[in-house]
Length: 283
Image (cartoon, rainbow, N blue to C red; front, side, top):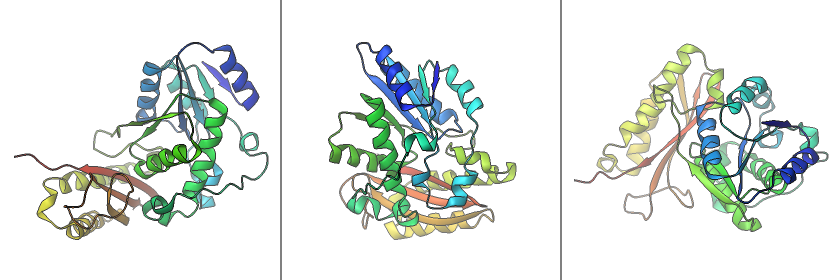
């Protein structure tokens, strides 16, 4: 496994390793956990060469304090990646990726007007900046993203479509801790007690899914919010029930398409997101 910190070095190494078969790419911000590793293992199983990036991207943080406290542990990350079979870890500095300001502005229309887009202004523009840069550098055939970041996945698919990029976006299932909490690098910032209580988020979403049609869309969203907020460690930022394509709020269960319930919740000072696909139970 090669650790590379420069764009030139990465391109040279990829040229050396060029063989038949696709290059798989897994972009991460480090502080790796089993969720990331599941993406890497899938990439390794489907590609000849796999690149994993570790880069805390400054342009997608609208809160400087959030950027500052984002967990970083490169040595631990490398130890985990050694066991996966990936060939290259790309860990550049911000100066390497942004030698000057990236002034590009993306327009994702309605996709970025709700949920994360509404509560984190500029976040998805920063995501599109860095992912498009990495796609240009790595030239992957496939790129792997977790479904926990459901809205981000939709944004990246739209970006690929707009820019006509020859890369297949591969969605990967949410990986959860034993108590149901969706795995996230931010979980490292939780105290032991907060981590236990944060499991209420997923527990509530799973409970909401059986059977959800007994309540109206509005009633279900309100029930989820009230249930989570009853826990003194948790504060709901939003609960949105949206369609799985344009991510627009669902008004009725009769609306077309699959429905996804997405939440953002503060556990103390740590902001966590999660989602569940609402599945109709067959009789």
